[in-house]
Length: 426
Image 1 (cartoon, rainbow, N blue to C red):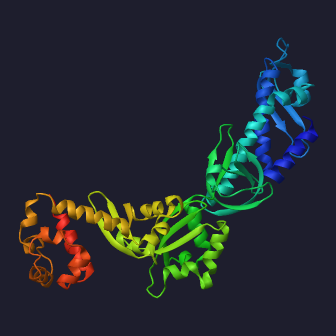
Image 2: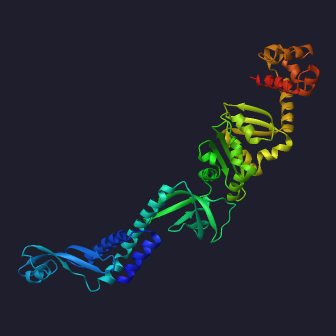
Image 3: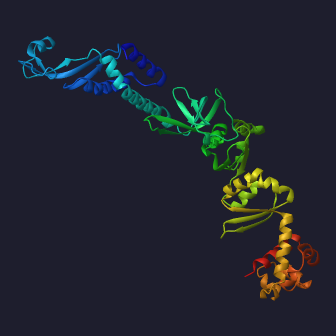
């Protein structure tokens, strides 16, 4: 490694890596000092000085001034020492230039590994300084190459970042030279002492930042994103709330003619994005998330943390979604297990349950109807008794439609009566 080689390293690291020359020189001097100690046997307090402009190397060692030299590695005669410092005296120590003739080649070879390590550490510090305060930002880069299979190395300019396979949707395909935007997820140490910038397009925060960029009401704090659930590449659901009653949070996120959400969908390569008004009530949230699909019936079992919903037969496919994806996202959104049924199956199931229960020996089925329907609408109970439905068993032997027609109550009330009788089972 000659002088020109060192100067080239200085310039390259400053220009391409953003590492200051003084940092590089300090690393090289320290590493060459280690090499010099091994190369110059017996010398004391060896130091290496590297000229930051010329790249010239000088190695010094400390020697004691003596009358007669017995150990040339550690001693120097007064006559020769006075050529360095005319005022020196016997017994003093003096720094002597002891650069070996072949030190530029041998020492540099021995030191190369240490230099590389120190430069890598210095580069890591630059990466940390420049990127650690940018974690959580969306940044742009160019796909430079593939690493470890489908992991992508993305050129950000001064550094290369890693977009791992788990960090981008399976639906996305990349080629070398493609531009991409991603969330700066973290900066982590590597095994070889360097640092690595990790990107992500699958993190929930990536979605949050995209909306933050597109929707001023979010950046102003008027609209808040409460939840983000996602199947990357396929579908995302977010819940939003406005602190200003005059501003519709869903409308703000969608934008005029849908322009705001269209920009986000385009960035996500046409991934579906559902924006739902937030509610702390999971049932209301579920209804909003399924709109315009109507839930025909809904039952909540808080002990089992389960919600059962019944929808029209034609709506079942949309509620479930492709490969059950929409249903999974709904479960995650409301934090309840979902039991989803189409209405025709529910009707058949209820017929079987009613008939089975009516034929059972449950004693409460022969009690007066008003006792079992305690707390129910008095007008409804009177209508049932007037038509001969004075016990639960008689009610169970009738379909909701017939019960409605004969007793003069609505179909919905008839279904509620039957449901309450069924729930009274021991």
